[in-house]
Length: 173
Ligand code: ZN
Image 1 (cartoon, rainbow, N blue to C red):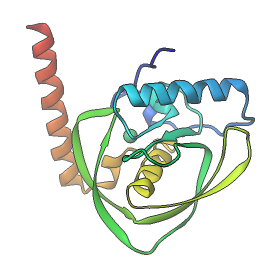
Image 2 (cartoon, protein in one colour):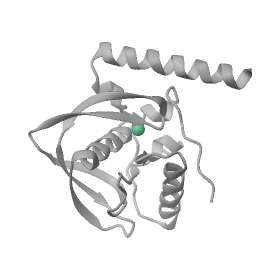
Image 3 (cartoon, rainbow, N blue to C red):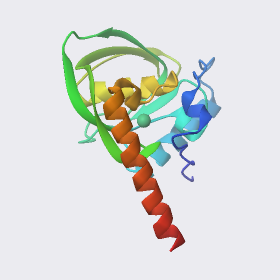
Image 4 (cartoon, protein in one colour):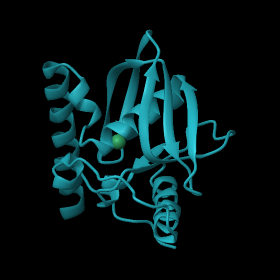
């Protein structure tokens, strides 16, 4: 099974609100399998369906040290966040080559459907909580840089454009 193409910054699907999954069918399970393959082949920790061009509320997560279970979030909803905020470095497969610091709640409780269509409550903290929030943001058309200050966001975009231009030059050389 091949990896899917990952949409890059500027692609309109990354800015849409993804629609709810009405039923967890074999199509959805197939998409989830392909999303995991795509995420691992790009060495990512999380991937949301809009990032592979599908505007549906589905995300997959596997945060290092990859010991625990992998997570599938279908129609995820943040039901509670802890009061404490932590700053952490984030990257995104749709904004490659750059990383930025984002402040988010350290703990989060998420409700989502699993691959059998059953509702599950997931409690996460630390990197996993950060990743859940990053992926759920994608389903609302939001990117991590939107949560940065305008100055930090502009600097990030500057680094991103530079990295993309340099890579294009190498490819054209
Ligand atoms: Zn992302």
